[in-house]
Image 1 (cartoon, one colour):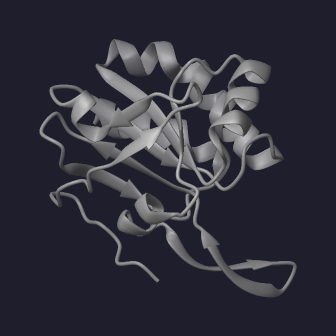
Image 2 (cartoon, helix red, strand yellow; image 1 turned 45 degrees about the horizontal axis):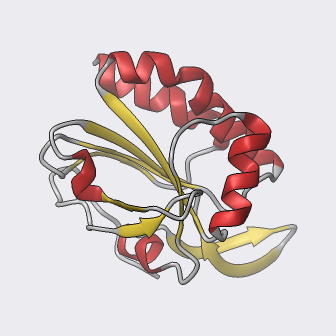
Length: 155
């Protein structure tokens, strides 16, 4: 189990391929706020709900100076199909070895129909312009990602 991040902690750096195979880095967002969310698998019901809610809230988020980036263990091709199917319009990064997922503390024990296993914990982070964690939501419910971010930004 990875250690969780707290507000004020530096956001762990990353350099991962997006759905088009281009490398995206945390430093690309320096000077802007970033809503970084981790989702278990592209085109599954919860991840689709979460991603489409963020797509639908994107105009509000961009208006508040916030970019959106998703990270999953899916390969770039699966993320591309997911993006195209739902017209998401923001970077979906591939973390097949879960290294970035673990660095953000989003790896741990889960339960599915009573069976316990270790995997990606749906989580999201609001990262400030300097690359520090402003808010961290671990084990966030899929439909709560966008509302929690918008609430934090308007506080």
